[in-house]
Length: 122
Image (cartoon, rainbow, N blue to C red):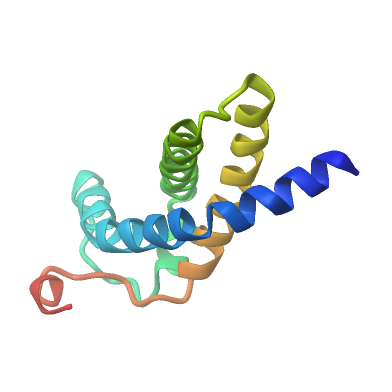
């Protein structure tokens, strides 16, 4: 019960970091997926990011870990500035980052698959 209370408090405290991190991830996502598709030499024949992930599960897992650790780093920096970064808080922040990483990946599945032509127009 105490851990749930701590998580709730941390989520409220880290709301700004969460929003900023989502913005950063979203701005980097297109380049990341385009470089992945170039690495496997595929044309952009997908309509959504979810379709891409269905055929490239390892890239989905890689993007989840990327998102998780971007959240985790942002959260640790914010809590470190407050002087409350203990081992237990790090464990809770990692759990919170995992949750938000999963939510982020789930939220982008229906986004259109990026392409080079639209890259500069967003």
